[in-house]
Amino acid sequence: MSSAQRPHRVLILGGGFAGVMTAQALERRLGKRRDVEIWLVSRDNFMLFTPLLPEVCSGVLEPRHVVMPLRGMLHHQSTWCITADVEAIDTQGHVVTVMGGDGDPHRLQYDTLVLALGGITHTFGIPGLEEHAVGMKTLADAFGLRNRVIEMLERAELEDDPRIRQADLTFVVGGAGLSGVETAGELEDFVRRVRRHYYPKIGEGDIHTYLVELKNEVLAELPPEMGAFARQRLERRGFEVRLGTPIREVREAEVVIGEGEVIPTRTVVWTGGVRPAPMVARSGVEVDHAGRVKTRPTMETSRSTAFAIGDCAVIPNVEDPDGRPFAPTAQNAVREAKRLAANIVARIDGRPLSPYRYRTIGTLASIGHHTGVGVVFGIRVRGWIAWFMWRGYYWSRVPGINRKVRVGLDWVLTALFGTDPVQLKVEDASSALGSTGRRRAPVRDRDTSD
Ligand SMILES: Cc1cc2nc3c(=O)[nH]c(=O)nc-3n(C[C@H](O)[C@H](O)[C@H](O)COP(=O)(O)OP(=O)(O)OC[C@H]3O[C@@H](n4cnc5c(N)ncnc54)[C@H](O)[C@@H]3O)c2cc1C
Image (cartoon, rainbow, N blue to C red):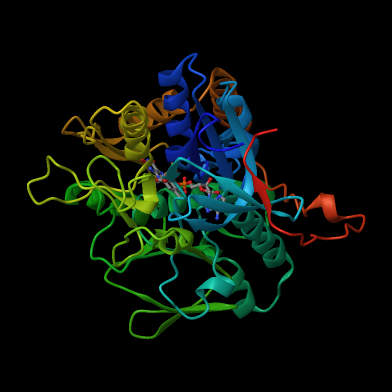
């Protein structure tokens, strides 16, 4: 079928906040229109609600409750969810090649493209980081970190050698931004609780926790006194906070920081950087020095048929006197998506596009132990009230009543019964009985959704 005969196809790459919210906003705008179809490609068939990820690591929330099935979020008859890896993007030829679970490459043609591939953990070339550290970006990361921590506690109970035992019981978080501090808070909460109830041979003083940050402040996203409050609370709970200190090298059982200080540890959590999905820099649109897609305030890229949004894009803020772009946050991605959907429909209908404008409501962070910090509508909040606001806000943002109820129940049940150190060693069960692996087949053209 030629593109002149079929509906106008909007192809969205990425099933995170930016991609899914764009698809949802498009569905709402298009209503019963049949002249436009939406195809959404993502690696996973779910959307991950990242703000609650650290609570998966601590076992407060069940992993399945912080992800939402894409097929349950998108309902339009003309929407097609494709679970596949994006392998190549040709913005000149209007074709994207994806690799599905069948192992076959498929070529998807489009009329309008949305790049919403987000970011990946940036290791800055620090030796050993990729091999030995754990990230905090995906569900697998959170699950992996939880298992690693439990593994260390189990090993330490058996270990006689004090040096090895110290490495087992030392936990280092690299990066003291929002996700680093939230991860550190949850990690410490979890270790403290399970040690007390389940590991009688491990004393409170045997556990060592570090928060290492290159900048000279904790929570640089917030006013300095909020960061200072977070630091003081973490130190009170036993964290050694090292500011202005780079991580130099990560080895199997130690990490080198600052001027060569060696900390024995088998658990380094890295939250110190995110870079755009490498695929976008190879798509033929203009990118900045960091590889993020440069857009206009309307989210148009250097190719007129391609838009970019979310963490993989750098979108100028027309209201910022210094022209600084919007921060890569879920809060922005959700708002950008509404404007982008309006702009895509305007482009299809031949109307002018409008710039994305948004003034942030504020920022909140949970630092564990029922404590939070933040700024809301310019008002600084901290302590229990900030933590409560953090929970209330993110609970209200969890998509769908189904997941809202599950998350709410998890919180209540954890408050009543606590958390435990069950270590689920889940491998990919689908390959357990000898799968034949992926076939390679000729590239197929996909021009229709049937
Ligand atoms: C631990 C943590 C806590 C956070 N807390 C907050 C918070 O409290 N508030 C806030 O506003 N922000 C928070 N953020 C930031 C927020 O998660 C991001 O800004 C947001 O997810 C960006 O959305 P996105 O859709 O652009 O990217 P992503 O969410 O990264 O989504 C990108 C999607 O593209 C898919 N993808 C990537 N490459 C390919 C490929 N080659 N093929 C197929 N699919 C691909 C990915 O699987 C993913 O589904 C947090 C982030 C983390 C990691």
